[in-house]
Picture 1 (cartoon, rainbow, N blue to C red):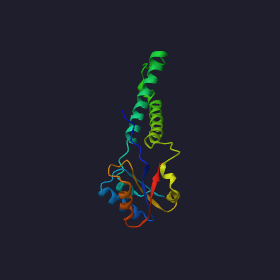
Picture 2 (cartoon, helix red, strand yellow; picture 1 turned 60 degrees about the horizontal axis):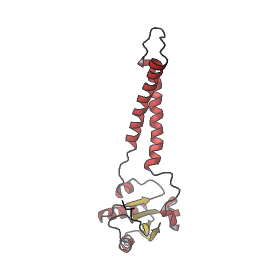
Picture 3 (cartoon, helix red, strand yellow; picture 1 turned 90 degrees about the horizontal axis):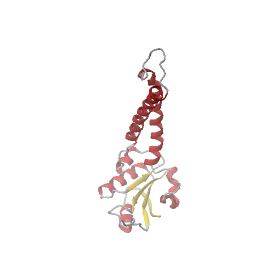
Picture 4 (cartoon, rainbow, N blue to C red; picture 1 turned 120 degrees about the vertical axis):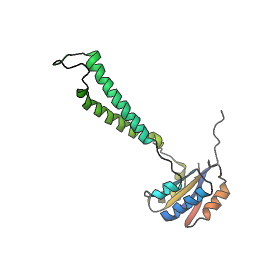
Length: 182
């Protein structure tokens, strides 16, 4: 199996001063056929994530599976302790007395679901990520203040360095366009 092709640049980044311009640019890029792009902004812009084609997350499924496994694990642990390892007849109750297992089962469910939510979120987001190629662009520091950025990645099938840069340069409200080195 061949290693993946490494491009000379990570992509091309366009800078915008308003969220409206960034959303319009992302929509135009999507309409032009670009599929591998990302947007960065100092605050959440719902239309921006829709415009870049952000897919739905699988995190709810991960949390559901974690909760189910916690529930089953909690019941199994209590059954093993109460009926297999240390069977004690207390007051004539059955060894598998499910009503007394409910509180521990609930807590195991919540614990496993919460842990799977935290670790699933970290894994699905690719975190921790101490380095990202967009950090190589000096103006990107403005993304945490008041500017908006749209990056079309070089892994996009339609990506061509100069043509993509020219495409972004002719967007409404663009402040500048830069290549993002690896």
